[in-house]
Image (cartoon, rainbow, N blue to C red; front, side, top):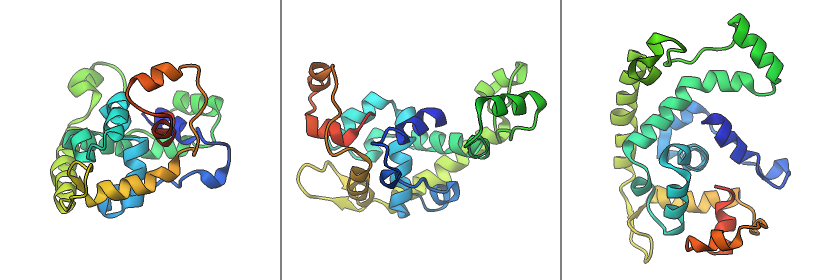
Length: 207
């Protein structure tokens, strides 16, 4: 999932100044929605890969609340994936394919925290260790559920479909992630067939 999400981050106009700064993993786990800038980054660049990019795109267009687009399980699993491989992905930044391949072969690449690798063990629990399964439950119950409960303040303005405080902050912050003009595409009719318009498609970028 990281490679997919990172590819989204790289799809800017080429100006480094326009790229949002990624959050620290501890910020996501400790603060959640209480740090709207960090959690907006998480919700935009990582969460859609678990929820489903088309479902996410359609939901954002129709003004759906984040809690309606993604379940507690979706959020918890996305956070678990990040925690599982965070050290390895950070290590890979700036490395060539040859360097990464060599590190895999000689066993010096940072290992994932909760996945079991290859072989018979990896088939148990879909490759997740017992510690990983327990950590998932902990993230879901002690982090994501509590985070959502703290964010129950409803925005009652028309057309906002039960938005919480974070939903409003998410829309305001994430607008800065996208191009101001819609990218040219040969699939204009297909894009508009889903009920969106060029301005909305520009705001959603290449999701």
